[in-house]
Length: 398
Image (cartoon, rainbow, N blue to C red; front, side, top):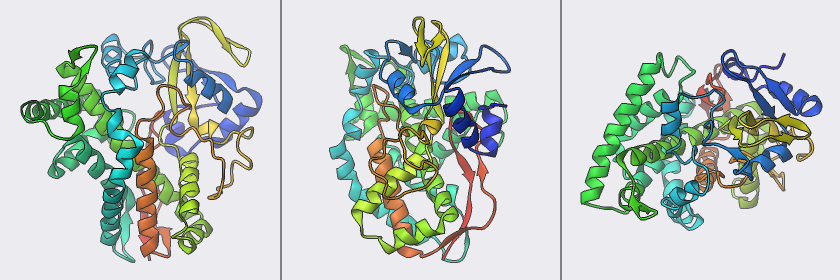
């Protein structure tokens, strides 16, 4: 039975189900316990085509989540970059594009490497380390908080709010719907205080850019600033944290890969291609939902206006038509047309360059210091049909 909802992801990544669907039913109708079901789109080419046609495949009409949202939630999600269609999306994205441009990432590279080295130095040889919270969470939090202008002493508050807001399907992060709403209210209030400070005294940070920026000649409203702030804070730390945890889990499972990377620690070309393979192997987002704006079809399957197509990037990253031997981790794989940052088009991940830099820097810093890493207990996966999260990963470096 095909089941691509949250309980499945809490147990394992359903690669066997995706392989079956790619082979036999690549545009599969999937029922939901409540509400109308969706088409699970599992082939690389179809996901790329839909991602690059936002006029046909809208995100505003139904959001990017599998399940339908209340009208109030939909209105709020439409104020986030993830929830906007062009041309509105393009105008809002322009406010923060400069902060994530390649030249800015190059400027940040030295700081990222320095912070990664400090984190690696803090790992105690031979001791059990809970990698997710003690290591993987730290670097993305530090970097996005610095970019947003958030003081270092508030990093843990951002971490906690992020977990409670995105962990809506996981009781380890959120026990009630109200708890998520409280977390949102708390981070909005924090944003309001920071925005008021930057309105009076602008600095060279993204919060100042939001407060003083204009779209079509108008300043952003307080709610628009809140939604922008939350999107950048959550996406800027949650996704990269999960990519880093997935990378370390892979190294514990493939000791020969760890040995290969240690032996070629100064080979920049290898580390660049290995980083792309870590991204293909461990995407941080399972899928994005899109809603058809008119009657259409995918691979000959009729889709009516208003129906949902859920684009499963995890499946695309193992598509046999695109990747030779897709179930083998090849650190020298090139080209590597993974869809971990999306299928292209207007919603290609804003922070792709930043995530790449952090994965390479932190993993390399750890492997410079430790010839071995092993799991010392079972890892636990996040219960979510949206975020590909590892919430607990006990390891030992030596």
